[in-house]
Structure formats: structure tokens, C-alpha cells
Image 1 (cartoon, rainbow, N blue to C red):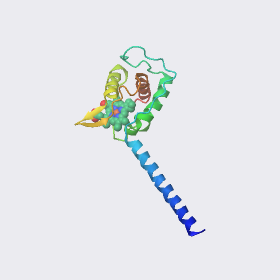
Image 2 (cartoon, helix red, strand yellow):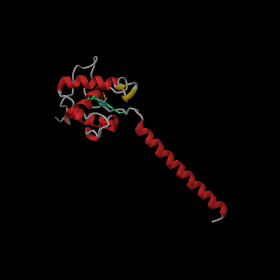
Image 3 (cartoon, rainbow, N blue to C red):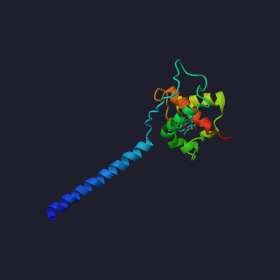
Image 4 (tube, rainbow, N blue to C red):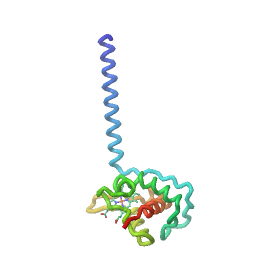
Length: 146
Ligand code: HEC
């Protein structure tokens, strides 16, 4: 190998290293931000008018499956994988079942939680469809404890 070719190889290696570092940094950032992930609701009956007063998909197997995926992509990083909280945010398996739990669930999911000016949980209103929110609720009820 001539010196010139060696240095070209070294530059290539250096570029590759910088590239790898940049990729790692981008990934770390992606985990920390709150970019919502789209939820595919194919298979769910669309909700036509306004907001449902309680979960229209309760105990609906298709909704539980869609909700599991929506949950894992949008909620798990704070509320824990499979809804088992690691302590960062409340354990959603203990949310009350039925309409009372539905009300509280929707309140939080739509508005998020800002405490002393700090956003602890992002608002999902206008970002995630109502269908996707209820599907996540169905999933959480399927994981209910307590
Ligand atoms: C950035 C972190 C974060 C993300 C992402 C997040 N949450 Fe939260 N969530 C929190 C925190 C922190 C609280 C507690 C707020 C408080 O102290 O009132 C909370 C509270 C809640 C509550 C109320 C729980 C209770 O026991 O009162 C519900 C319901 C909830 N989140 C649902 C969700 C759902 C569903 C998603 C995904 C669509 C989600 N959250 C995404 C951090 C998050």
C-alpha cells in the first residue's frame, strides 16, 4: 500500500466512524423526543361523530392488537414495555376499568400532563386518531391488574 492509499483508507475509516457516531446520536435523540408514531387502525369501525363517551372497542380483539402496537410505539418509552411501568410514569395496568377509567384515560391522553410548566407527558389531541386512542385503551384494559 502506498502512503497515499493508506491515508485515503484512514480517511475512509474516520468518515465511517463519524458516520456511525452521528447515527448513534440520532437514535438517542429519537428516543428522547416525543415524535408521535402513526397507528394503523385498519380493521376498526370508524367513529363517525364527535368523541365517544366510552370505549366503543372494549374487549374487541382487533382493537387490543392494534392498541398494543400503538402503545408500544407511543407510550411504552415512558409507561413501560407491556404496560409494566419501570417507575418513570404511572403503571397503566391499574387504571380503573369501564367508563370512569375511560374518562380519565381520554383526559390525560388528549391533554397530556404539564406540571409546573414542565411537559411530563405530551398531548396527543389532534396528533393521534380517536380510534387509535381507544384501541390503546382496549389494550390497557386487557392488561388490567388490581
Ligand atoms: C414522555 C413520557 C410519556 C409519554 C410518551 C406518555 N406518557 Fe402518559 N404519563 C406520563 C407521566 C409522567 C404521567 C403522570 C403525570 C402526572 O403526574 O399527573 C402520565 C400519566 C398518564 C395517565 C394517567 C395515569 C394515572 O394513573 O393517573 C394516562 C392514562 C396516560 N399517561 C396514558 C398515556 C398513553 C396512552 C400514552 C401513549 C399514547 C402516554 N401516556 C404517553 C408520561 C408519558
